[in-house]
Length: 85
Image (cartoon, rainbow, N blue to C red; front, side):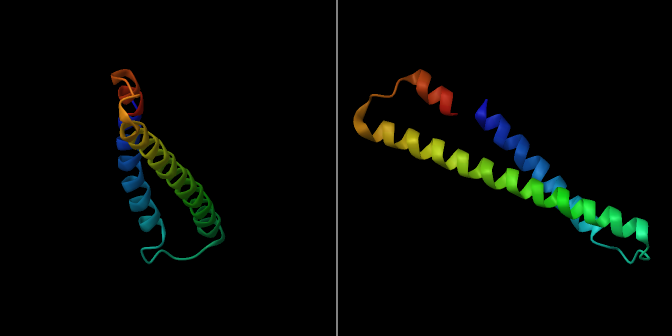
């Protein structure tokens, strides 16, 4: 379940990067409307980067915790491993 979430997030991240690059300008004339849309795109992209970073940090924390449990010596059950994956 967690693995599927991170895989889905990775796919969405590639799409967000593509959209952000496309909206950065392809020689479009500047106007008040396009400036407003561009500003909203920047805000959305920054929020997305925060979500992406938090997700990566959470995944690392969970993996480190699982590795520690496995290292301690078998206190971790198969169900716990499934929970982390």
